Length: 267
Image (cartoon, rainbow, N blue to C red; front, side, top):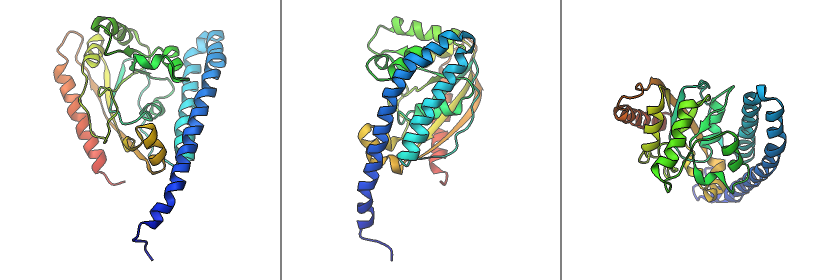
């Protein structure tokens, strides 16, 4: 007989939250252990074998991705993630992605092999967060800081875009979406990146992660999380010196359309 009282769902809530707490504990311990390993073993290996630095860093980042996403969030937490697409990991590739959760980052890392992407990151993440802060420095993630002077933080972003030898990823919303809808784009960083060189641009959209966007939500909802990802592209960016605003408008429309299609498609 079908349970119409809701008691069945209520009886599962403690189990759901237990899985959530176990996933958080596992990921937290992994970050602490990974921080030690990265500062010692990984850094030493990259210095001893400079010719293999890119391969070492890429494999380490994929190991971290598998630990946080595949083991912590999926195997322990119970989240389901549909197969992700494969994007080219080469210089001159720019990924523009919507932002629903911190799990967006391991998801986009999963799509790019054998090289690793550099992700435009807020400056405040460079200090005080186990493993994450060291990753932003070791992998030379371009930083942005809304509180800094415009020239100060945009010069570094421009240099990273012009001279980068790995793909670049940017979340133009800047902050995570609370309900999964697209937020307002912060265009300054994207303008600087597009003006620096010609790009092969991919628009990536993910859905289903917004329910686990915050730590408290992660604990409550990770076992019910069903993540899906798709992309459109590639698109050739305007040559340096041309107006990039129409191109940004087009990318924003395409992201909104792709997200709407992803949400309307049957699971």
